[in-house]
Length: 483
Image 1 (tube, helix red, strand yellow):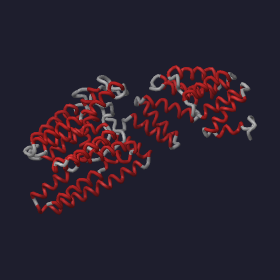
Image 2: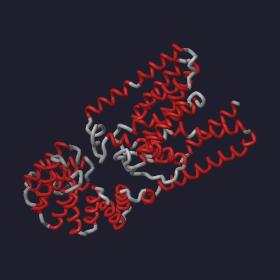
Image 3: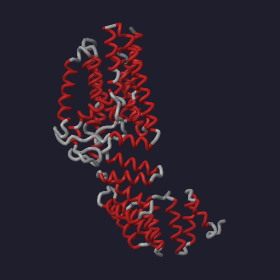
Image 4: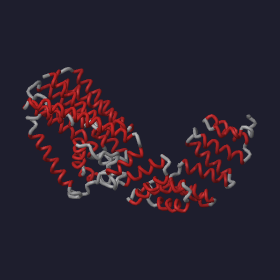
């Protein structure tokens, strides 16, 4: 009946909305793009299906508009036209309005062109997101990423069916070969069997087949050629809206065949919704405590070097330097390159200078941004009174990044301390040329000009620093006779 269908749809929507797997997409503010893409994608699919049923042109126009908004929210919406083609192939009545079906298919094919052009243009211009060999910033190749895809799919399905072991960063092991790990081969066999059975039985289970294949298609961009981590829970946000409803639909079919099971099945669905809501509340409470969130990540993935590093960062922000040190040391021992620099800065902040210096030296060999290491090493040398070594450290930083603002500011301050105000003024002038709104640079150049008795030029920097909110400059009001 219509009432039963409405209740079934409500139950399916509630299961999707209350499922704890959605926590990362909804609570993690950076993933608002995922939520927006999900909203506009669902609206686009709804208006498209409605248009197929009614034949109203405005439904297709709305669908196109929502598709454009989804695509502007996140690139994974590029898979929506394929979802539409699957609907035409599996669900739409093949005997109805053959000409209209042909036009819709052509329109869907045309809708695939803009994202293909954008992807091609981006691939040609960017060296960060596409590569045929080793992917930029990763330790695996494009082939290895694609080889890992079935394992990623099945991990997502497993977490939807049984959401235990949730984590911010799962750090999945990449598939290096068909049998490395052995689950790669099993995954490809299982994925092939799943797709084959779904296609083979599509006429008997049209909507379920469409939902399952669409679930796979919607994840395809992020599970194949894009330069991304293998798995994150937020990627299941939109695809799960198609897979999770299969649970109440399956239970409803059981009820349809055996009416006496209606009450227990209804109770089971309500219990499932209550359990999902409880797990979601618990997961969100975990997210409200950054330290607890990072610690829970390590309970799920104890060998995750990046998770140890993230725990260290979180503890450092919370003021627990001792805890941060332990986490950084664990991350460094597990080969996470950035942990050594974080360890060095923490030791430096705690006043453990010899240990900090040794850690900085190790970081120089592995940190992806050595200029940052040289700047901090320069500060350490300056703190020790070794101005010559500090000078060389800042110069080395500028060898790697000629416009590194921190290196330039510190170099200028050092030259001023060394009694070389002319050189300091030159350095600060260069910074201001690049960053005219930097109040600190104006103030520092003011000091360099005062040291050279350039009072009127220093006055200009004095007013520039004040205009940019640098209140410390007011301590020189008497010097300029402006009290």
